[in-house]
Image 1 (cartoon, rainbow, N blue to C red):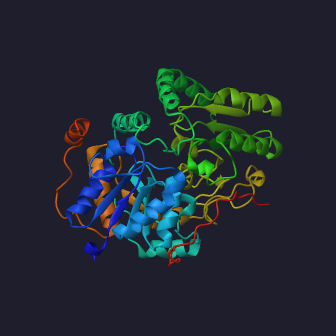
Image 2: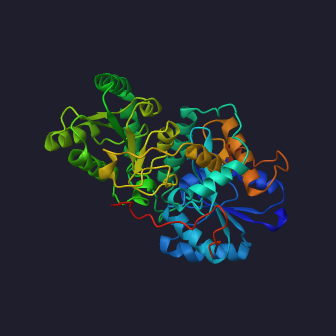
Image 3: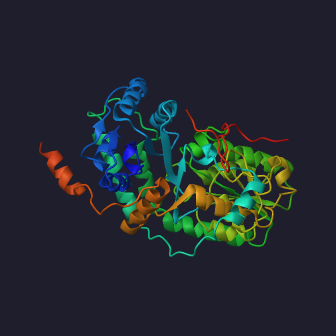
Length: 439
């Protein structure tokens, strides 16, 4: 029953989502708790949270005691690879506490991922194609719904103030260890630099695409080096290493008429010079005129004519699969299903890319939406409201009332003054994030 449950929230996405979700759960009479690990957490949830200010080595015992004393039944967190979250998930499993993981959506922009026990390579969704087809036949068709509204300005604002308070809150949380691999300040400068060069990037991308139009083309979709998809779910230390691996394979095994286009991630705000990196590889490997780089363009359009897509484990692969374009992954990915992606080695992909079996991607998508995704987003009020309702439904809870915590501005003003479940049908035990390097 609902009143027998008790929730604890750890770190969420920057912004009000977790606080508003918890308020709605609490309005139904269910105990809800929050542990703040950083100044950013406290900014997003300034009232009623419990501060953990100790060293990381003290975190497992602190969290286990918290679970025991509050009789917690459900843990909610954003991202399952952050060090504090990995530890908390493990301690929760020892006590049989359910862990609900929110993450960016496998399908974007209208969905977020919300799964029990793990996401991405740790997802328990079955990778067995027969089950996926049978499950899709059982499930209703995906409804046609209006798009989720989103504002980049809103997302940027929430992120800025969260990370601003991570930095300014270091005295209060002296031992906090961020999951981010780079400097928050440098990332901010990177975004300013990216905006300043947006016009030039678009022009260069358009010129490159015009120059290679009609040529037999493979595409490598870059990801962010700091993303845990690279750091935890692939054999590569960063995206530069993965890119070098792909280029070397292309140089050794692709015929002379083929071209490889390397496409930057649209949110890459690093100062790394990808264009020069690609140019040096082209010169060294004799690929001048066949190896290209763009920071722009539309990946969905590219997939309509590309021979194939290579990625580590990017969710952008769903765009290729939807277009029946062959996909080869070189890391752990939820969509890496026999019959859906190329199952041979990358070296063989250039000559004989395996396309997805007819109808299998639609079956996979239908199962994914039903089991792993919740509708909504983070970048507008309506998107957050939709997301809260979707998560409540997935949790088996209802919106008891419209009661909520006091407005954040009021709270901040006052503050300024004074064992893992066994696999069930359709689920799988998570695989290790070891590299897929067949052949």
